[in-house]
Image 1: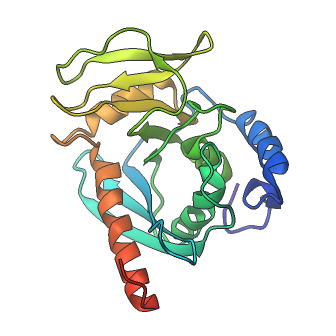
Image 2: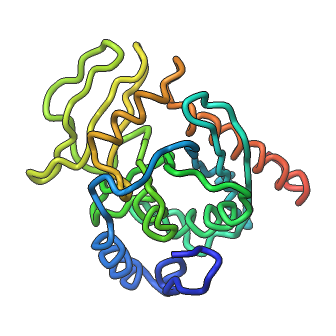
Length: 240
């Protein structure tokens, strides 16, 4: 599926109401591939969004960062700005954020083979967090790396040592893995986005550990998204 071509049903990106959004999420979730279905990884991407909740225009600032693997050196960054078509509603963030991310993705000269997304994959009430939403829309292997839970809880108490994990369970199903990436830091909530198995998702997050709480691709994407936001707000004359 080529994001430059108009073959995305409009309701996948801009549904007219919440009922249509729920229907779109169910349809998109049915397309998620929860197994490894990708080739060699030579470039790995990080994706994040920044915004100002006091911005009256409701703008969303997206960044996609491409890093070489295994060196994790940033080789390209692309950003985009868009007005959110939907207000902030938990469980529907993909419709606010994916259009801007898709625009940033289209600007990349080189596309990553695998993307780590700051947000949930299938660990979502309808199985379609932003990592799964973006992965299906772009048809790119993706992993959800969230900083807080949306649904579910760890199977047991999570150890304090770095590297400790627990299955993330919800309604009797395993939706992901809770990972303590750094001592005295809140854990990460890892889930399948698209075309990556859960075991591989956890392994990739661990491989991208550079000593910070966040894996390097999403850490760099976070920094880049903040720069895109600051530049966009300065150009618009909007205070931080």
